Image 1 (cartoon, rainbow over the protein chains, first blue to last red):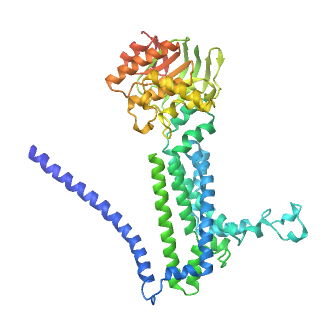
Image 2: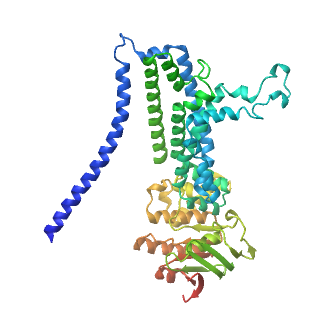
Image 3: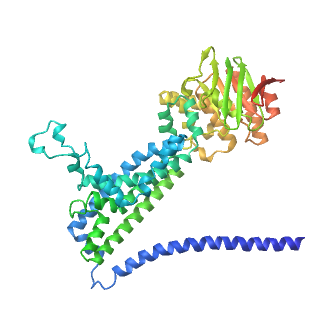
Length: 292
Length: 214
């Protein structure tokens, strides 16, 4: 009997080892793929440079400086806007259960499943329609010199188009993250707060929101990183005009289109480094917010 | 006095039909029933966080059936304590006073007074994460006491405690509510707890409530 159990135990240990090994190998394969991509970019970038540093060289170009600045500003603004919208939406999706909420949940996945180009195209078409294409002079007491001014002219192929295109996609990611985050916070504490004299808003503000801070930080980070990587909608809706609506992702495209492969790879490396820094910092902040 | 009249309540797997229950002021009532019989749902309905299908809930002659939970003035202590994890023990206990916008001094004085009474003064500066099950239950009780309600709804407040702590908290509950002359509905499935604490005993059986021998 003891011998039989011993054999069984050995079998279980072997099976457990195989299971953990399989998990490790699968994870390692994917990590290796990402690492190899980064290493390949690095190797390509830092060979045959005739003594120069392509990372610094590309950053010295004024249009790239503008692109970096616009990227940082637009991504941060988009991340704040996306998180601001995602908090109430995520809360609704996590707390209210009905067929309408299920429908809303599915509807909010549309930006995630649509091809990015389609989102850009749809935004472009939206601004061709009334009242977005209407002249503001028809609604506001403006002088004749503002005659051609419309929301369309203020947004399409301008900086606001960059933010709007990034916001459309990034918000959907932030909503998913925050829905999960709110679902992990038991509603019981919120209900207890109601019995202690809180209004619904007070219970949300004092009890739920502080517990959701790690989730909010994660959502902000995801929205920021998603915005940095946005390309398709930007190209269609904001254009890739140098020194105007050019952001890092469109800079890579523009450098490629003029045959400057080194420049494109250098910019890619800058994007990777920036994304890693933001992701790590936000994860650390999220963890410390949770611990304290 | 708590009066529940012809209350109908349907929750997923069970259904209450025509529940009638009267608990006079100052009485410690015990509500018993098997696991999953709907004891918690009934407390939730009384405190106002679960909508009812039909019937009325009357407190001291006032119909509170459609009243928001924040206006019912009942102290609710759920089974797992449900403390506010982002706050310290002191902030948890003084939460109701903070919401009432009481001054910091008054809030602190009251919190210390209650903490001393429940013997958790040494925990005031602690984060909720660091507390044991018994400490959590005491803090949840202190939080409800700080609200100064005349009715308390306690949902299995002693179920997760070891024997020694169970006896301690049991004695504490008896003393606290006798001193305050409050009306209490205490949900439990522990007979010795029911006998020690209860003045009136009810039992949920097959979706209806029957008064049982004490």
